Length: 461
Image (cartoon, rainbow, N blue to C red; front, side, top):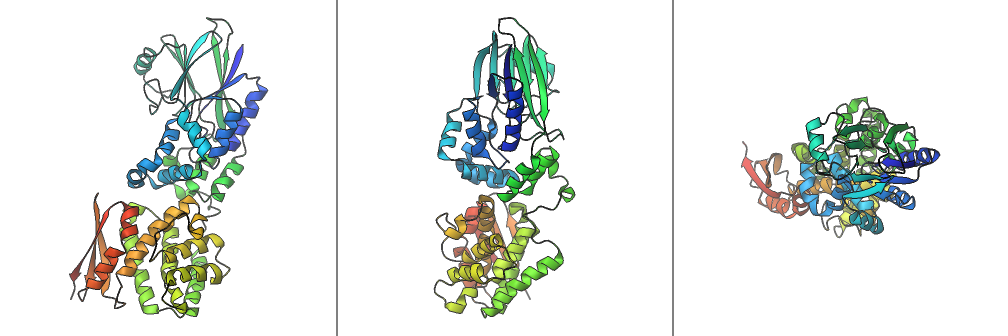
């Protein structure tokens, strides 16, 4: 008999892959066939690719792998068309993939035809018709017959649906490997299939699916260490897809690295440290608090686009309160001075990551836009860079709306469509300098929201 380990949908979960490979080795396998989706949601994309290459696995590229490879071209389109967590998963994988591993994925085919033990085999990710087609235990038999007629193979090995099954139609056996790294059926254990083939033509094949326990805690800890959304950790813990775990986030255990804003007492303590630093720097309270109010209003009005929550709202509030503290050393380069003071002088009760986030928001309220060459920005994870870019974009516009420090703009609301965002301001005096400043400082705003910005006003009594 020829014994082959059939794996798929590892999704950057190295602990699960290692457990499966160890289990498969104990079964005396002679080969590994991988149905694709090396990356996505887990914290080990490079390590997964490199481990499977060392194992000489016969692999194809998955639909998720292809999306990560296309991310730079699709970034602007996907930012608002995809769920935020999915966008961040693509962004992070694109950011961390090494050039060598990117080239390896790019060179992989979408399917392979193989021969083993006298049987013809098609290795594909989704179905013979499409890498995006889900084949499940419930796929109608007429559809399987149609797919069987498209291939010249005895076996079709697939993944993508994350649902293990074996079905035989018109002499063709369809085998779904299940998911190594991201099961979707409520069983968080890793899943793979052991295929046994007779060495001579015409011998029957046998398939056994195995569920393998692994160090889920290690996978979860790595996700949190990379500051990825805790929903990704919950997918590993619960054994369900993203959409399912997002239905009831209130049932999750409190995320280890996402404690802000936390309890009201904790939030007050951190805000007290922020305000204390602002006061030590002799900040202009009237202007600062009004800009903070306008930034928070923009945050609320734009929630359908950014889809952030209380944590990001808190960081925006803190960055806004501290954005002008650099004036204590003079106007020239005061945004950079604000960053330095936040990093060096903010109360030690605020951790380093939060200082970087708050400091970066304050630093980018004017001047250059966020760049990887800026040390403080490159020190952030891709997910936090994304957050900072959006929050700083909001602060830039809010600061422009109080250009003359007269509180000319009392309130605002936004109208959003596919091409532009109209910010209408309630005013008691004509705010021409404010409108001009907000439009001028709207460069980052237009980039991150992928829409034109238009500022208007209406006079109120």
